[in-house]
Amino acid sequence: MEITNAVVTGAAGGIGRALATRLRAAGARLVLADVDVTALAGVAAELAAEAVGTDVSDRKAMDALAAAAPDADLVCLNAGIVGRDLGSPWEVSPEDWERVFAVNVGGVVNGLRAFVPRLLERGRPAHILITASLAGLVTFPAGGAYAASKHAVVAVAEQAALALAGTPVGVTLLCPALVRTGMSAEGEDPAVVAEAALAAVREGTFAVVPDGWDLAVAERGRLLAEGARPVLPAPRG
Image (cartoon, rainbow, N blue to C red; front, side):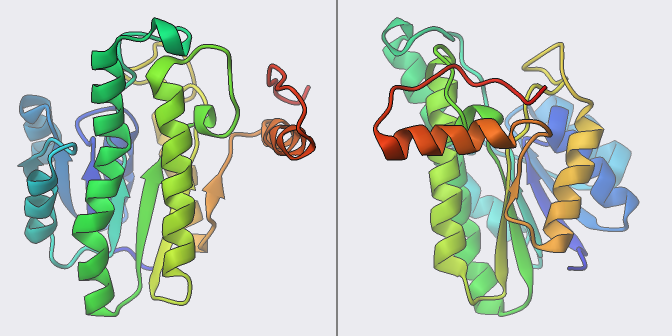
């Protein structure tokens, strides 16, 4: 699909900033959102984009973002946080569970709620890119609320794709492994992740899975179907 007008949440850094940079280079007009309004203003100025300070966990804020981007044909629901506690479920504070789910899951749901009816009403080809994580496709022993929230995001994206089948609105689910962002000092270049995500959007691909992890994802499904105990996932090779 041709992308002319795009919205990106979590655009002040990391994958969001990389998505915005790639989209602007391809000629798209941008509406960028982030809770960090200072950093967002800098990115928006650099990319000649409109900046809308937005807490994605706030339903009314997401409605306002959708109203600011009436012509969007690509909506990137990318904003997310790791949280402070990355241990086992019982080691994570109640506050962390609530905030991580409010941003990571609530942000996606609020985005779908705000944008999907508008996109369907317009009746033109459009696409929603949802950023989850490899941590939402396989399960590690730790990961705190972040990992659990990303599993929920994967389910929400699948629900959305099934519900939107046969409409002009497509869905792509991005599930990167470690990426060099404010969340991690190690990992893949966010520009590479953004390029793969936008290629999947243009091709109509549903899921973007990191290289080498496909068998681990399949193995998890097999073990669940057989009622077997989970195993520690590992990439091929």
